[in-house]
Amino acid sequence: MALALVLSSRADAARADAAPTPGPPAWGEAPPRIEGAEAACSFRHPACVHATREVAAGALAALDAIDRAWDLATGPLGLPAPVVDPSTGRYDVYLAPEPSRTALRERDPLSRFDRAAAFSVLDARLPPGRTLEIEATRELFAAVALGAAPATDAGSLRGETSYLAALSLGADLAAVADVDVAQAHPDRALVDTYPGDPDARRGSGSALFFGWLDESFAAAPGRVIQALWALAPTRTPASSPHFYGEPDGFDVIGASFKDLLGEGSDEGDVLEAFAIDRAKASPAPRLDWDIAWPSAPRALASPEGVAPTGAAYVRVATQGKKPGARLRVDLAWEQHARMRWDVVELDAAGRELARLPIKAADKATEAHLQVVDLDDAAAVLVVGTNLGDWSAPFDPDDLEWEPHGWLLTVAAE
Image (cartoon, rainbow, N blue to C red; front, side):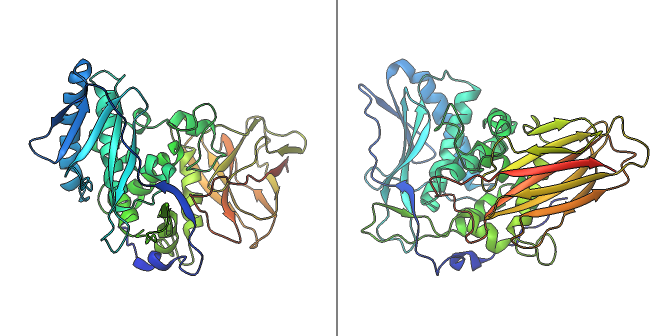
């Protein structure tokens, strides 16, 4: 059941005592030059699509999608309109033979908080149809986000806008974001890139996360995303070539989700709950190990280290166990990793029967649990979640996130 989300402006000062971390977003990028381009402009909104006559049909289809997305953004979703370019008075979209993206053109020098105008590029190689509609809708939401919160990191931006595009179009998230790629690499940070396509797939994991966050906690569809942009106001000095990304969306979550899942709960409990629910998604995340019921103790090392906000999954089948048998679970992991571990009992259809947290002391590097009452379970899933370093909260603007290894030993008793 969805819970009403109460977000607090405490996030404004969540990390005010720390030096601002310069994030990747920068302004001043020039739009692509398209020889022979003509503009098709909306009669309803200050938006124009620039394209050659050869892709005129795509330009009109894109403009139609932009009009609909603009209406949804400023209507039911309650989002602001994109900040228009002060030199043209409009939001400009360019059909060019390159991957779709949205970039910052000019910052608003008079605004108390960071605001900026953006333009978008749509892939001219896409024919008119559903894919082009999805791309146009997502990039319109990206222009909205970068206008209101221009310091938003690329991974969060991709995930948030992919979810909003799927929500607006009634599409499955897998049709908008590369969910299969994200689920093939659950060990990576949610806002990270993935092997083979480092740019277009940045933030695919965060699309899963932000979609889950909104569906689980928003009072109305899209309200969590709206709050993340509204409660992450940044102030960047005029001398800086790029925006300062503090506070960011994860700071908002850290400040606003305190005690939401129970007294003493924090953003770590949110990430832990997501990692468990992520196992139920389709496609399911890649398993680090999938083993039969152990006839003798087995030690399983992590094939890949787990980065902050990433997760590890080990499945132990119960077929062949003796009635009343128990499973001993012993875990050890590297220092500096703030790890959470849970055991989830599953039935034959993969449905959750029970969820058992494996308790560990703060800053511990080991945990233990004896799992009982397994007669109705077809499998046991051990889920590990890396919440980041104990010394600092997760920062999506970091260029790299250090992974940490683990060792799981299971034994029948």
